[in-house]
Amino acid sequence: MEEIDLSAALEQFDRVLANIELLEKTWERFEPHIPDSISFGLDTDEIEQIRREFTDIVESMPAIDGDRLEAELPILDDISHMRLEYSEAGLEIEGFRNLQDYIQEPKKAIDDYKFRITKLRRRLVRNRIEQVVGEIDACLRNTLETSHGREFRENRPGWSFLSDALDELDRLRGQESLSDTRLGDFRRHIHFAESHDLRDIVEMDWPSVRDALVDQIFEGEPLFVAVADVGDLVRAEPTGAVTSRLAWSDLSATSFERLIFDILRSARSYENIEWLMEINAPDRGRDLSVDRVVVDDLTGTKHVHVLVQCRHWLSRSIGVRNLNTLLEEVGLWSKNFAVVIVVTSGRFTQNAVDWREQRELKGSFPAVEFWANSHLEHLLASRPAIRAQYFEGNE
Image (cartoon, rainbow, N blue to C red; front, side):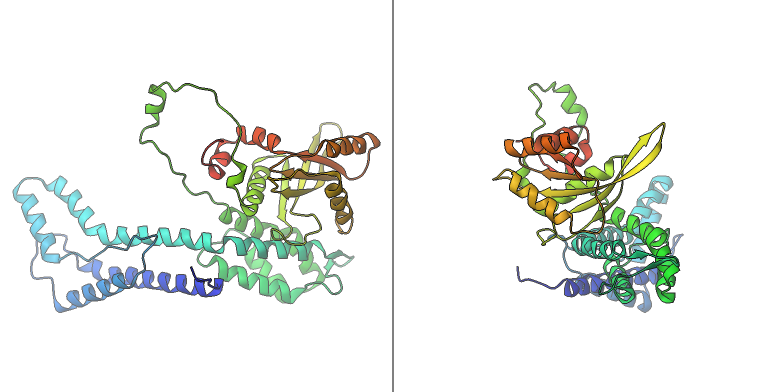
């Protein structure tokens, strides 16, 4: 397929959604004319015009994965004929239900079509929203605390960047609601652009907006289930051993990072997960940032800054040279990470394992942890919902 610009793709979705609104308004014009009693001669020139407009819009709608919108407004005299036939047959209650289904068919078809379009649009913008969220995270993370609030670092993105980024997120999310967030406060603080406004953005506004955006991006879609009745599976008394091994080759680098993001979100002991850079970007070794919550009954709760480095490496293992390069790059960042977790869909060399153990014995900073594919498979064994979302079957 010919490569298409995201902005151009969104324009097409906007046109489809605009046509859906036209359909909904046309239905609203038609609905009051539907008879609630036996009455004939209601299909006037006005009704015929509404019906033609409705049909014209339906025919303009594009297919969704090969399925076209099929909907037409009912003939009003047909409704009266049906009501009369049910009445004469003494089937008023059953007839009422059937008539309601018949009358509401066009509206139901529009609602179903709109639902599918909305889901597709969400998938379309998901990657770009992730990128913009990561850029805002990076911008705010590099601000400086002052006696008056917070300030942008010299030669770093500032107020104009935040305003533009927020505008782009508005365009990307479209009709998705952020009504229960501090979005209004975020805009107000950008408008006044003072040091105390930036502090409120960092501490309150952006975390609220960001969490809602992440929930929208990662909102799950139903998975295909190959059986009509799961009770049949139990009655069949299936046999055989169960494996926790997974087909890691089925994942792309992007989906692997999303998988790790979902695993971290599922754990109550991790908070404030952030994307740090795009996949395959020169990212100084950083993919995800997260706070590990350590609860101590005697000393209280502590938040430990953790860097999570994702490596979807299937054909080679991570060695000492890779790890030394990673730690050198980690030191270039302003945020002090107490722990670096290196996550891979593959394995670590024996020399790397020995290297990590020596660092642990010496108490080197930051601490380094390894999550190999076997550890991930262990974590996913107790998280079947996440496992099923990313893997269709076992190896």
